[in-house]
Amino acid sequence: MSGRCVRVMATTAATKRSLSERCVSSLPSSVEPFARLMRLDKPSGAWLLMWPSFWSISLATEASHVPSLTTLALFGMGSVVMRGAGCVVNDMWDKDFDRRVERTKSRPLASDQLSTTDAVMLLGGLSGTGLLILTQFDLTSIALGASSLALVTIYPLIKRFSHWPQLVLGMTFNWGALLGWCVVCEGVIDWTAVLPLYVSGICWTLIYDTIYAHQDKADDLMIGLKSTA
Figure 1 (spheres, rainbow, N blue to C red):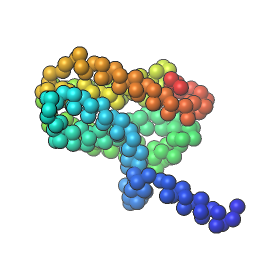
Figure 2: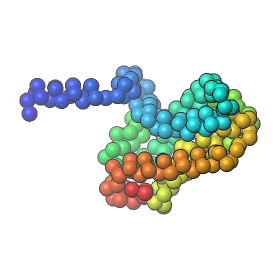
Figure 3: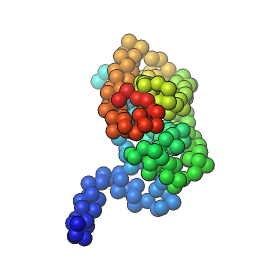
Figure 4: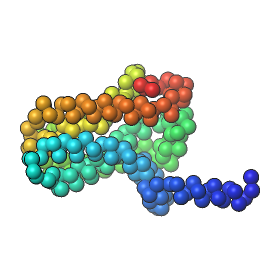
């Protein structure tokens, strides 16, 4: 292949990179691995975490009123922060597996760009930021939001012994459907409205993450990890 063809292919690949990927790539070399560990270069996960809470906030808002922009902004920031924290936890649990999977072997922990200590420090900062956001709400909402940490922690472990890690991911990613209503109604949840939203969100996550998991199916089978794929 000629040098010109290689340059053209490289240029084409660069132009296909998303804005978030280009932004993360432009960060200082000491910062970029932390941003990649948070998956800031792949923000789709933050959107998937954000949408259920936005739906719930909108449903809970009084008819003919616009949802509070402050509440939406807090949930938006919280989604980015807690999705990042979840990715750190996931990669800390899975770094040895990630080294053996083609798609994940270049992740900062798996490739030794960052140490476990670096990851713990980042996780502490993200958790503190998430807690700061959570304290803007009522006590019931704070307790409900904090309880989701159990799901965040155990999700990476489920794939080791169950074919249903996507179910736990769905429960985690759609927790905002519960929390959004709770915040708007100051600690009161109408389960007749919220539970169908939460369950349908879980089903939605099961579908898209099962599709996503198919790209790792061969590697997962080889190293003994399970999924719905």
